Length: 137
Image (cartoon, rainbow, N blue to C red):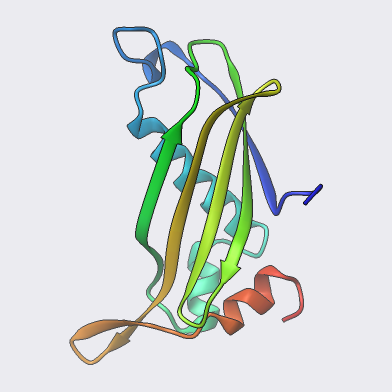
C-alpha cells in the first residue's frame, strides 16, 4: 500500500527516553493510541463517532509491538497507521514507525466497538464504523 490510512509525526524528546537514552517502550503504545485517535478525528473524533454509533467506546482488546531499532531524543518518528483487517466485531490496525528509512517499531492494535448490553459490555458490529472511516457513510 503506497498511501497510509493515517500518518502521525512525533518529535521524540528527552522525557520520552529511559536512562540509556532510548525511547522507553511504553511510549510506543501511547503513540499508537494517540495516532489511532488522531485518525478518528478525521471523522469527527472518538466521542462523535461513539455518539453516532451508539457506543461507549472504541476500545482496545489486544496490542503488541516489536522494537526493531532504537530511537532517541531529537529523532522524528513517522508513525504510519494502516487498517490490516476489518472483521465483524473488531478492526486490526498496523503501525510502522520509521526514523528516516529505518524502522524503529512495528506494532498492532485490535479494537472493538463497545456497546452496553444491560450491565455488561459487548462488541458491536464494525460495519458502520468502517463505512464512516472509509468515507462511505
